[in-house]
Image: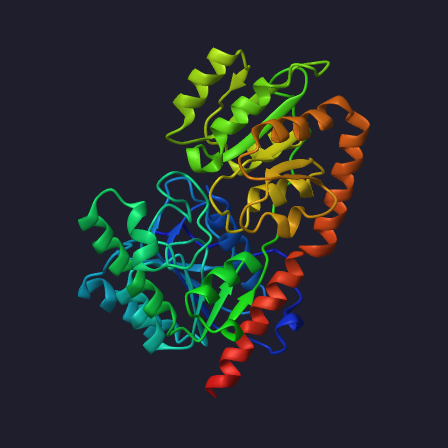
Length: 410
């Protein structure tokens, strides 16, 4: 079940909401502290709990998940089902809603259409769309050949991305059902203008889509010892091919002209790690893979790296881990995919066209060759993040969405 509740000491100005109190029930697939989207939800509800009563209903709790300060949490089995939920599970959710009597229901990564439909009829529903599963039946806006898909979902466009025709028909119907259920929400929140464009392209009214960028929320850690001597290029998170990790190994292998060759640190887990290790050994790239790190350990690592790489091949909905690196003053080099240019188009790093391995290598090399420039760019990036992606702004903009929904329904 959910971890025990502890009161929050996170400072938040309740006046940001424009009213004294607002009961919020977040309905999420899981409570976890592993991914960027998971951590963003935890950070948001922790700050909201200082404004008014906040409750969580989650489908499952990841084994390492810490309690969210000040937030009551109830486990409702089935909320993490991406297809459908049984009646008994919906009745449990109905009991939670009846007990909490929320002013706002806020769906987070809930993908089963019947749950979204039920929530839309149960109260004022706001849904945060974190990924592509409501407008792309495939692999995050990637074609079967691994190219970026720039068109809107349709049977004709999407069918060639699947080798199994029967599976395509099934997943396409499911994606359409998700989109139909989402369209019945009172408001939709996304983290980037890119995601807003994608939802508008499949027919969601743009006036109902609200862009609320996330904010970095990293623990305070002591200065750590670098895991290896010399410069470090780091990638963190899911180590899968769609994240461009194979491109990154090749890019680091091309750094033959730098004064001190870097070590590539891959902090995370995923199906591409073994391929990364094999390719790194073949190309002579020093690779350290410490596994999935907790928030404190990952923050300590990031404070010691020279540059963070985000060569995502899929259309990244936002890229929270890159924003967190910038907030620590670490330059970021990334492919210009999805929502990444919205936070990296300026001081703090370099954008590279998708799939351009040699340009990725050169961009990384410029930071390795000039430590003074690297530190300056890092400081500029941290200042921009502090000015543009403040927690107070994100909480206030989310509260404004809630107020608009409440006022429209009153």
